[in-house]
Length: 481
Image (cartoon, helix red, strand yellow):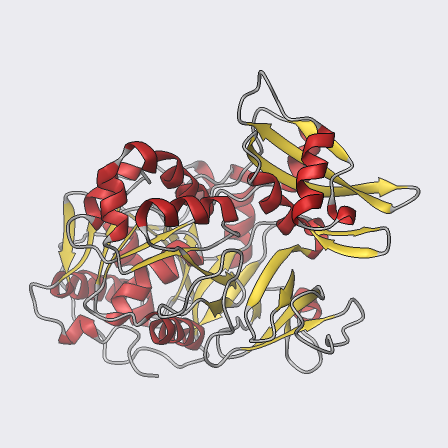
């Protein structure tokens, strides 16, 4: 397989590949430091990477990929039990980490190789085959311990090249983001994406609206973020003309990892004249759909399938939906070169994840418009509500609730109901806790915008909603508060 990062040997020596705060590496410096890592890890089956938001993490991952060795990114915020499971399951030969980086017990026990970003080593000529493992990324375990999704080199190349095609992503682009580097959004799209194109990436370290304004106002062309980040941007825009100007000048604003509420879409568009585009993917599939850069974004839509990706919606029994009518809800199944090869050490889970004809069962529910654009309505396990004979996606109700001025945050779930099968429950953080909206008011608000059968039957007020590191609401934890 050809090199994942041709710019390592073809870019001008002074072309900046990445910047973290005051620290930066040119392509020549990155190639040299990653080459030194490659020499150290060549022949190892897998290596763990302590994935802090730093140049060392990038050098470690690129070095492993140059050596044809699979990298296992570790979340520095993981608890001890989770780290013990991941290390026992992936059995890395050693750990790559920044010099002097303190490590918790389970990780500290591994043989350690410190990453020197000023080290010198040759870029290996051989880069591995298309099906060779590139990354093992552990998915969050909702019903058991995390599973390691084995991502081959061809999946990385296929996803990044497909995104380049629909977004016009080139080596002239400068991407800014503040995402963690232990998952596919921050690492694959946010770091390896610019490097494959020969462009630059500026990492904020930690997300701030001030950082976004600074970087987009000084030459960056693209912003990647998650809904929580864009919500904070939308909140800050009315009092921050510099932020509005910076966003208006960006070539592309992209949101992913969860659906961006319509309300935030509209507030950003009104303040900047620019619309946020969305894409849809998973750890196991990388990216499946994306809104093209030259298309008019539609709030709530994640675009058509990417080049090379086959996508279908199916009934609960696996029967494909007869038509894309923009109304019928089905589970998304995908097939293409972007897919993982399986779960590490879990042939049972791997077999269960695929259909006999090779489609991956995503567990995500969606509707598909006649022109092929996909609109997500939630996860099958937590967001598909069967009430009164209807299949209802929680996502559209959440968007409707967020349009109410008295609602700051919202989540929707179902709970058993003797008459309806399931009743719709709205979990709401009020904009003003002193005068929260009532159930009847919110029910009428939803019924006017959607349909009467989609109105919430129960209202539960909360001071905050539980979220994970990516800003996704953890619905299974709602009942704990």
